[in-house]
Image 1 (spheres, rainbow, N blue to C red):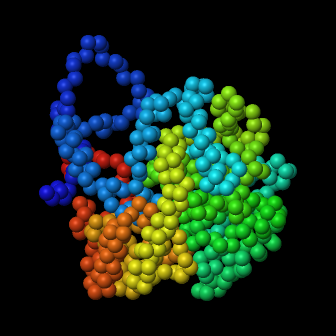
Image 2 (image 1 turned 180 degrees about the vertical axis):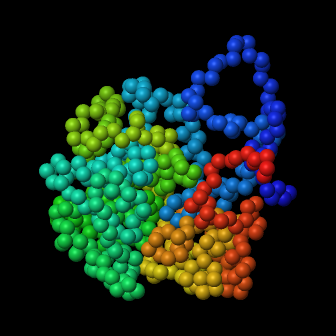
Image 3 (image 1 turned 30 degrees about the vertical axis):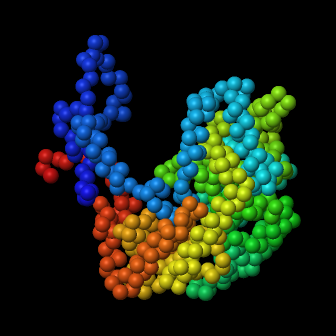
Length: 503
């Protein structure tokens, strides 16, 4: 049955006096309105007046317009929107976890304490680092925690360092995090193969020269606190000189931070601690199971070397002869980063993910994510342009160079995918690739699903070449067609207003 093509706003369905349920008459006096006048709406009813059937049908119809990982491939590059194993959800909903009070004494929630301690041990083994904190509630929160550990390390040695190096291929949150922690960000350029350039780089079009890593370290020397590297980087390429970078930083007592958002390309295969990483965060809500769209829930534990362990947020979970306790006596700690221990339910899901996979299963998940991405790359290479020919891991970034010759751009390609039943990939990011199409299939997808996506992408490319207007008009099958996204972004209308009598 076809969907109703247009759904009115719930306020537009409002009819005075219509109700969804009958409430008993008050048997007490009506309370006086004590709201401050400046907080009251002047000419807007708080709630629409609709029947129960109106409400149910309205939101049911809207839900059918939505798209999620249970509907099909969700190839957002760098976002890891994969299937969420239901066993994780089942375990997280167990009363002992879901209903335990976050401020209960440790002795009354020993099960929770064991879970957190066990998860820390798994993450230590996976990363190859000495210590873990579960406090951070998201990836960017983990970044801030890690950078604060770096700052605390230098301060403890009487060193006031002001510069954080940020590759142009890093995640966009990295410079924001470093700036929030009080550092001046200095960009490190990429070389022709998409990895960090040790040498200076001259832009062929502008003629401007950007200083490479060696020049920047020579220029800033002891001012450098560290470098924040996303590895694999944002174009899906592994920084194969990471060991050399670590040595260069360590020679001047600077530290190497790794953004672990792409750890699903390394999990069970390579341990960051083994190639010189000092501190990193992990996105439990990406690598370890739960899609993180819609604002949460997130969890961004931080793993670090033994040198940074004294500065971890307090309290930490420790194992003693009498059980598991929260240790507060940590004089060098950077303090508390989150109430209790971050998003505890996400930690339950993550440990369930680890235990259900086992060490071999985690490795297989990583290998499947890499194989799936490279299968898409191989099938689309040539039809869609690749700026970097370097091998990629868990994601591949194409661009619209070939299609733009026919007037079809990245946004048009994304809209074309909607008409063909697929959620678009990440577009126009990373910024180092013009017109980027960033595709990450994750380990969840079957060959049949990948083939269907590839067929859709090839069909769009064919349409762009033979009938560009057919792609530029997409989507034509969706409930809502092409929108003015520029105006929506610059002048968002976030509140419905009742039409005036004259309108």
